[in-house]
Image (tube, rainbow, N blue to C red; front, side, top):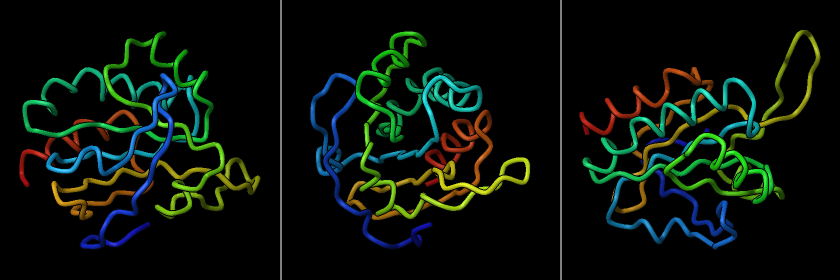
Length: 153
C-alpha cells in the first residue's frame, strides 16, 4: 500500500465506455480511488452499489469515485448497466495501475495461495496527494467509511 503524503501515481485507463480517463482529469477535486477484485462478485457488487447510493453525497462534497479492477471494458459496462452505477469504472487488464498502487498481492483463500487485488481504497486530495489509505477494507462498509473521511477532511 502506498504511504499517506505521497503523490498519487499518474495514470490513464479506459472507462466502461472505452473513453480514456486520467487521474489529472480530476485535479481540483477529491478522488476516492478504490481497487476491487472482480465485477459481478458478491463483495464487489455490495461495495459498488453502496458507492452508487452515496454518490450524490460524495459529489456534494466535491469528490468523485473511481473504481479500478483488471476486468475488461465490456465487463465494466455490463456491471455498470446491471446495477445502475453512476461513477467511473476503469479497466486495468495489464495491472499497470494496480501494481503502481501496490494492491497486487499474495492472497490466501481457504488455504490456497494466489495473487490478486487486495481490496484497497485511497483518498486523494485536490492536488493529487494521497491523504488516506485503507487496505483489506470491508466491501459493504467501505463507501460509508469513505464518506465520513471526506466529511472530516
